[in-house]
Amino acid sequence: MSKSLKRVQTALSAAGVAVQIIETPASARTAPEAAQAAGVALDQIVKSILFAGESGGLYLFLTAGGQHVDLAKAAALAGQALLRAEADVVRKVTGFAIGGVAPLGHLIPLPVWLDPHLLGFAQVWAAAGTPHHIFAIDPSTLQSLTNAVVAPFTMQP
Image (cartoon, rainbow, N blue to C red; front, side):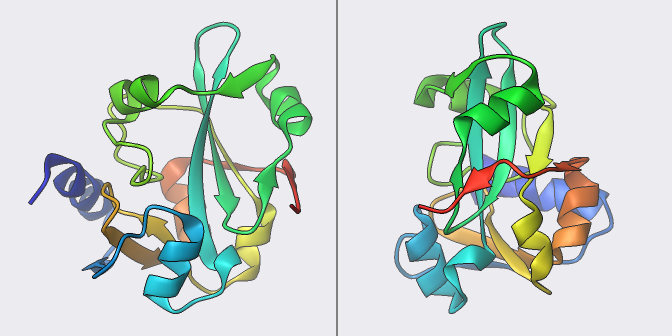
């Protein structure tokens, strides 16, 4: 078992949340791939998208799979200009490679925002630390576990 997957399992267990992490036969690196693997709608996939602020801090936006982050809205929430975080920075701060970034179990705590669209589902699916592992969770539980602020920051493609 990879260190990344184990870290996600540990974070979920420590919070008292029982979920089943599944290994996908094909890649679940992208939201469409994860939706296909889970057999759910694209918007039931939680994308963990990191942005770097001009201050050097990172900000995590948990976004429904079919939505895109509106950079102006995200920057307003963060209180500063944002750019997409570089892959090496994402790995250094979260411990996960892009395509497998889980919404929890990061190496360093981050400010987190949650797309309100995710709360419209009874269950959403998120990466479990690798491009081949995902788990289902109630979106309200995910919000609580990540201390995410629910805020509108997306736009449809």
